[in-house]
Image (tube, rainbow over the protein chains, first blue to last red):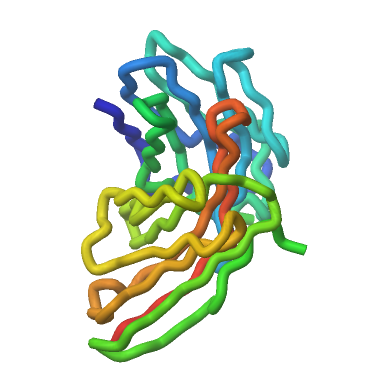
Length: 115
Length: 114
């Protein structure tokens, strides 16, 4: 069965320090994995995606994520947090199923950035 | 201009009223989706459509209906709104030819049912 677990509902960092948002997944096949960001009162914006190419994926705004099949993880990182990174982040897994894809969203991690 | 638009952006209504939320896209994608977002629950799929003649129920379709009027338009209806349908609703589109069937989201509609 397919599932996504975001291990932290809230993460708080100081500006200029590294960001780590954790995501574990389960999938029956070879999944595609995504990170989306949602700023307050905004829609979801695609940060990055893994679709069976390079396991280290670079996204927008300095974020990157590494697909680790042995650990079934797809953690999101950024070397240095900026105030504008404060938002909610969603990890998403998408699997091929008969007739198309099945997409599951994690519950989200809210990132707070302190000055 | 935004590729995926939703109207209205905010709506307050009363229990028992019929409500329609509309979604339009200029991305030329065949696939469209409706999700609801509740705090701490991520996004849950209500309905999805892989083309104009295809409508499928998602995880939480009870109390909702949809209409795919054209490739670019996908509307969500609440036939008789109830307070626990108060949520943020998102429309999304995707193109199955892109790797992973990446979904692109509208800005959302905040619905409050009193």
